[in-house]
Length: 85
Image (cartoon, rainbow, N blue to C red):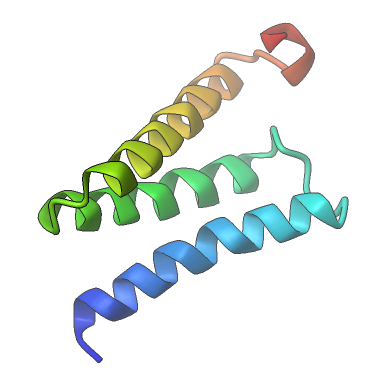
């Protein structure tokens, strides 16, 4: 297993941990940790997808990362989930 494989798995695990915690009602989708796990995990996967020229996967993970970062910026500016609707 290469270093890239390990990093890719860690990126996927970050997203899956956030998702599972939200589904179990242990983490709110506007929590710092949820947004950060999604942003970091999807950014890692987007970079790997770009390097592999996997365009569909890059689209998915790139947009996922952008939306997560927008959520982090909104939270940093004091916007709540209700204010985003």
